[in-house]
Image 1 (tube, helix red, strand yellow):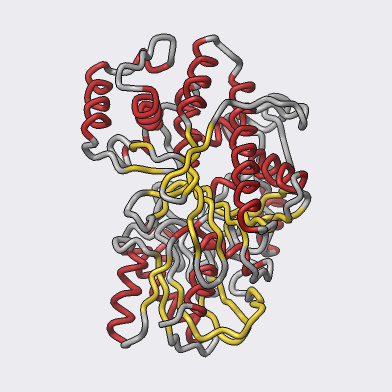
Image 2 (tube, rainbow, N blue to C red):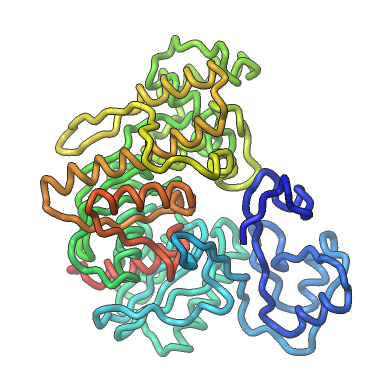
Length: 480
């Protein structure tokens, strides 16, 4: 259900600056009884501290959560496995998984082929793993971000549980191409210990194949993978990619222009750094910040960032559309620093008007250039025009809509070029950026109008929570 905080009776602090509120459906009669007896709204969330797995036992909950919970409802029935709440949104008039857990996992995804017995270990963020046998893929519940020992233990315990439940003994192990991800390290150790083949899978190829698999598509598609972070085959951070892809492999035929991320991960938490990365790398180190929100930044920090960009010191290159949205949000004055993932990009999406002319020509300029057989989306004109809009005090709603339209237009133009060269008219959209309802709607609609058949996610998340499914399918068809 959609609410507008400016007219809703629900306090704006529940979902500040957002147009949407989540609705929690009762998964046990206990929820109904609690609400009936209290007669007032309750604030509820999963029983865990940030970045940690949810508490499973009464004593564990009383100790770990004593500083954040006012009341505890305890039970004499033990919890056998940790399951978070599932999260779905409605897009294009159907439910779309954002987090697949309670009520859905481990119900299998049906594969259009008989698979080897494979363990795919997923990505580091929003981790799930996947086990396959016959024509079934058992995608685990949401494990979480694999950044600490507690979550790794939860991952290992759940892998063992699934293997016993479904009588699967892996013949092959798949993992993300990034060698430093905890699931990749786990996979490498397990493969060495059990003398099994290890298949590292490129992050965005796995995204596209996960979308193909749940839609039972085997023929080559144009894969459009937009997300925040993914390790590329050239060592750069990918996230704005156009592939010709199938279950067996991929060819990267297009990408958004590489830009530096000043400070690496710091640029994700401080989107103004990302904005400066775009402006200075695309428009020159002498680009003036006059009239932009950055005039209030610490001049010393700006000078250091300029030096980083100029000398490429701690400035990994990225093609990420997620980072592009972050930079645009900071440039528009919406979010200089973030407290949760994608906060800046979400603020930009929420700023777009709710009603607009779908067909009007309302884009920022951009261009394409060829490089080593790959088409590059050039972004200098886009960011120059965006900065000009900000200086002219253009409404943020107009800036947001123009940018969303532009990304959709780039996608259609790029797919048109690829289709002209290959004859492929099927497009798979994947990656966490497509959780953006407006971008998904604009892109899908424009592609369909251009004569493409469009495949999107609904059974598994388009974010990294669906990645393990793609890894498993690719590993099944890779020749060892």
